Length: 364
Image (cartoon, rainbow, N blue to C red; front, side, top):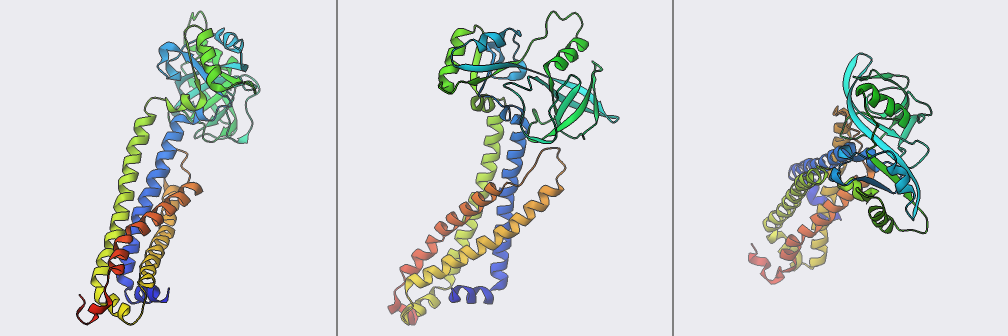
């Protein structure tokens, strides 16, 4: 420890520059991971947060709830399937709206708030109990009135949700009765108001996979999914996750390469000094431990700086997305950088272990 710290004190600029470079790379990894999670959450939160075990769409929907259309009596057909304990309809549409004179797009969900498909993530207020009320995840406040266009239906915000957006726009949850009124006011002479999906819960003694298969066999024209599968199949999610994953992976690899080559070059420059230390009795293990401690100190200091930078960046972001710095993400990222940095340091350790103390007089 003393050997490692002594060298770092004598080469403050060298180690300071490395710490700064590593902190920026860790910052990029944390920021990209956080933004990726926020974007995916804003696209999938509405489905991911539903209190249900699975969803059923029309077979023509191609795994997309927005493209699904089902008659209301599909709910009873799904509820009658063996292994289903409860079922309820979910209906959704995207429409223009105005709040306090500001125009915006809103995703409206009509759900059975006392059954499967009710939203979770309530942060303030309450869920709707009567028609004309809504719980919203978006840029609104309790008591605001949302006027929908072109229907003219007004929704009073009685609850604020978190992590319940769909398509990365403000999302309002209301009763199926209110949804019915919105659709009928927007489209004249509509014979019936379709639903988009059926949310269902599974009995305790049944498995989700068996129930999904049973629903598809028993209800014509319906495709059923577990909730996790329905979320994963939302169009565009896989490509977004892969794109951000590539960016995060490349940044991570660059950081590890920088650390590994820095300490390898540093070790090569100090081979003569290391050989002399070996000649006077210093073990190769102690020298290797010194390099490993320096790597750990640099990574941990850089991580502290990176976390502070990420926190400041997240606080100053104005993307409209629910961006949160997750503790689990921080711990996972820091540990991964530390472990792989120590592994990259094995290149330096290998050079130290191979030193021959007998060459101390002319070591290079």
